[in-house]
Image (cartoon, rainbow, N blue to C red):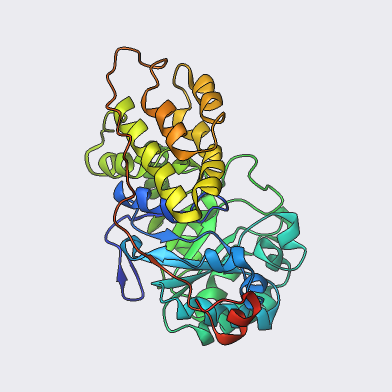
Length: 358
């Protein structure tokens, strides 16, 4: 599968852009375990144009993440145009437009899936991004606003005609939000009757290696995008690739490997955001990492009692309640892998707005 000049090989796996999840520390771990394509968290076009610190921070990535895409969203044509220019200056491998987020505060201003109520405007926004970009532009969207406006075949053809290089579709409507089953039959129809010469990436309920393979087999999509299934489980990419190739799923990670990855994730978070914020933000990840393990709730509670990285690591690396006979090595001096983030490159207007010389 190719997106422009980006060769992703056969049946590639994509890490979905997820707010408060797919930041650089998590992305680099997923990359190590087999994710072929990564995306930033979705970034507000208005936030970029006005130099909002949180939006600017999301532009950053590690060189080792490549290929990586920057995803932007927004419903204001001029803001989206300027945001595309800012994102392009960051030199990602591609720029992705979010036309799929169902959250009310996003859709009320024609951002995310809100644009599915105005297809001419969707076309104009896409054209504006393509006009500003010097690299491939892709789109992620949903089947439609609701069951009464399922125009995804029309959308697919329109997106291809305007010039996008790949289309990702979450197989639910905006009205469904994340409820019910994803409607994979639509992915098959989009592949057969919608897109013609660009890749189709399927998204929705690809939460296990078996389901990832089933999506490939049943729908004919060119790639599969994994979202919720990767939260606390970066091993899903390794396991899915093994299952696609051999029909067998590798043994689950040992407790030692799991603890080691969580400890590194925490350390990377702190290096990325600063210790205080890194420790706090990491708390939302423990549920996924330790789900299903005996004593997981007690471990999570113990980890949340501390606000310093070293104290959290001390608890984590010496925990025995889950598997008391396992001797986990206590690596108190864990350091983040040697990565240097690519800092945000901003035009003068945005730099002045935040008082930065980034």
